Image 1: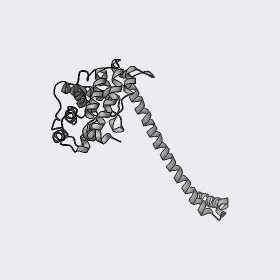
Image 2 (image 1 turned 90 degrees about the horizontal axis):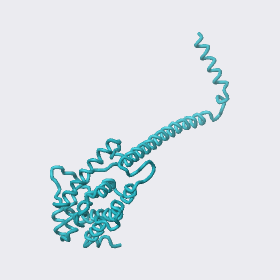
Image 3 (image 1 turned 60 degrees about the vertical axis):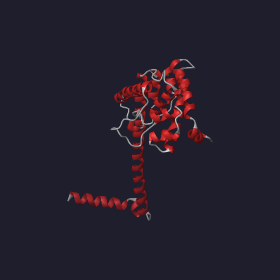
Image 4 (image 1 turned 30 degrees about the vertical axis):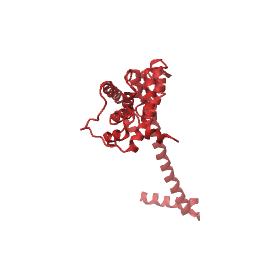
Length: 256
């Protein structure tokens, strides 16, 4: 009985409410429903944006910590190593900077340097771990081995700092698949010979050569910051390697 009286009271209150006699009550109800739906959607978007912003901030802090550990940053100051890194752009810029720092490329010929730098930019379309890529011997092979060793150290540090390559940061493994082609072309071999051994379309070959040339130019600018010598061997040989690669079809495709 008490429940019946409460229900009757609530019904009377609804009938007495000003909205009950509104001619546009149904329209207002639909607008109210739309308002609340849009409010929920807006709140969801705000939460997503906040989550992404927090992810960016966390990633920044982790990279900052890594660069501080490697002495590229000292508190909020950029060190000489950091200034060198600032001149390098690419997926493996930190690896390139560490190679300059450790003198990995000192003593290499221009063609050998081109082979090593190719590992910083090249990415095979399909990975075939069963077949080791052909690489130049001697000093170039040793330098490529050092590059892979340094990458392993950086990869372990990034994992320690929880820097995730899937989020677009981190250093992928260097790919040696273009080293022999870059070495041969920089050694003045013919295009037919290089393409035959590389088993690569001419268009792909030219594209990768241009990317190697671009990074060599960066290294020529950054190398003095590693040694303090504006005429460092690596810088000179990087410029010579650019000249050696920028010939024939590669030079022609770069015109205009």
